[in-house]
Amino acid sequence: MIPTPPLRVRNHLAEIILAALENGGARGELAALGEPGAPAPGWLEHDELVHAHLVRERARSASAALAARSTVRIRSRADVLDAAAALFDAHLYFEVHELLEPSWREAQGNDREALQGLIQVAVGYQHLANGNFAGARALLDEGRGRLRGRNLDGLDLDVFGQAVAHSLDQLFHFDWRAAPAFPRLVDINLRKETS
Image (cartoon, rainbow, N blue to C red; front, side, top):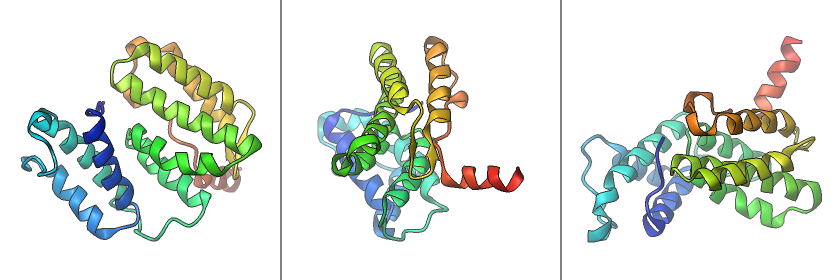
């Protein structure tokens, strides 16, 4: 799993990744950053060069996750959730947090609680990738609790929360291949078609 680099580097890269959701130029920059053997980006400070490999790995993962996605403007919360799913499933949990936070700020009531649960789960998995087991346990557990019995824009968050609970049981010997997939509307529609 790919840990996050220090704050300034993490935030700069997250800006590029989020811009790449809608912007072809940013997507090209991301692809260049993720190229094997790519030089360290010029925006890294001298003391940050040691983190160039993390930038490259995260950029490569983001570039692969976005390759099949259109760069059409994100207009709705459903679009935000679909983009969050692509990033989450690429294990880009910090970026999921950054993407969902504006929607959380605007939401109220149950929707706000559900979005907060999704954000906490994403940050919990990022803590796990960074080796912060206490932070991972606390946020995954709290996020799972917020998702219990909830739906958000047609997404069944309870099933996702149950999968997160399984992660909690395996925390110290976590197999990243068993990380749950972010809930998607497509999954719900497929289940209805096959029922």
